Image (cartoon, rainbow over all chains, first blue to last red):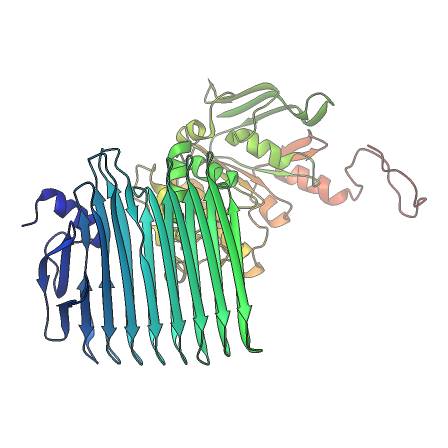
Length: 306
Length: 250
């Protein structure tokens, strides 16, 4: 059912070489093609609209769910609504990558709208990787929306990675943290050619003693454009820290708009942002170890985006 | 081994600002040279000129008889020249062990990364997986910088104020490490330093001021001269308590 191209795409977006262990649901060109559930993790097709419900039973530990999406045809416009119920005190990894191979001249687009309910004391690591390839002129477009509600004591780690390949992306992330909930977001983005990317991240510290850390690193090359909006709202006693760093090259443009709002006297919010070229001292150092200038540049960028 | 012939370096040629003036030096194999002298005397500029970070406005640099004056930093590095920065740059997302592996990648011999850290007085298990970023202190960065040079099989290693920011306790370890570099490779070592204890390692000491070599001799001769001479090395006569409106002599 999965051909060689499908397997390449799966490897890129979900690090999968074979059919994954544990629960998974593979979606290809707008339809589910393969699924597996386990004793603790159920996957159910939505009745009212396109998408799935992933239900993780309370106290499920060390299991994973892979829900890769691959688009290998042109002129596909796939919108999918996925809901995740992460049961109390469970500890799971969810990997949701999307790969587009477009060799035609028409646009292919996938919009994934993901709603997570991370119940009390649960731990969730959510990894989202975007990848695009194909020799055609058809555009590759991904517009993910991720909404996460973290209940009391929940720990959420979110990794969002998009390296080249996607022509347009608009990513919306909204997260609400209740008492003692903890959030770490790692965002990595590389755009080149004429690509554009927009990322909006809103985090609300609603409960007492919740904390959020957002580390965003991006590289903008050629004529690409990047736009970042960070909105961190402290509604209660808690800590929030945004660090965003961008390396700008060639004729690229990067816009970063920070916003921190404290609605409580014990909310501590920090925003750090920097945009700049690769430091010449870094290049000189690696060249003095025998690297060519382009090898040095690649090494610095790879490390930065790791 | 390395010969610097009539090398000058001008920053702003129109105004004729010369940082280095007709420098002539010859570094011999397996010797340790310490370059010392007042701040702003041109020591770091000379080090950067050897590595190829700066290009001389006049003169020639020869490595084993080969003219390397117009070679790039990369080419000089591949010919066996190494340079430890005075202010080493930091890298986001690159771990200490990764940087040291990069440094050792052109070395044909196997390199033990943990031993390198030990040689600069750092405990390997504490540092291997740390990022070479602003989480490291200045002294830690300096030691890792030295380790990147020790990782290589070099003909010539230049260290720019390696002792700066390094605590007294680690100093002895560092001094020993410099002494032992020769045991592995026949590296010529050039250290820019103001420390007497580093000067004691030298076969020869070179004194630089105002962009020129003002003295060069065997260690003991020159050390005696420096220690007995309290007079300042700057070009003009200066005195304390002069008129506050006085202009400093250019």
